[in-house]
Image (cartoon, rainbow, N blue to C red; front, side, top):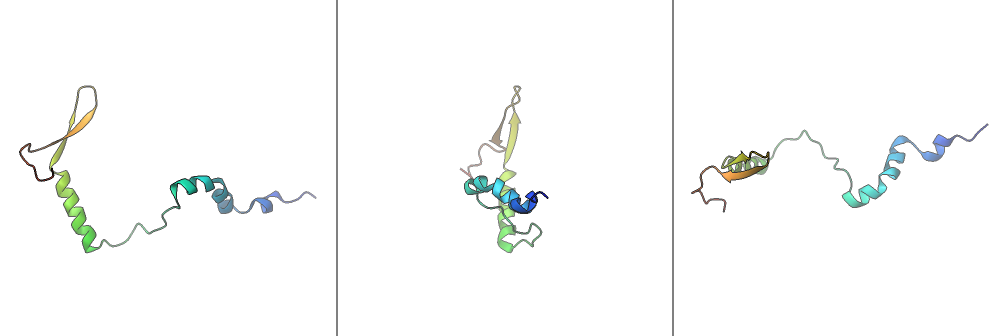
Length: 80
């Protein structure tokens, strides 16, 4: 009988880790934190601040399809 090759290679996760080893060395390990967590009060304040900042700008599209961002109120110097 032939030797069982799957035992030499390990399970699927071990093969994946060997195959992506060089990539993980460059990009770092995968993030394993939970996505469904409660927001802290600090994160809520930061989110509200970021949303207020984005409402001060508008995107203008040129005829060639390129876009750029301009302030909605040119006299507003609060973020500059």
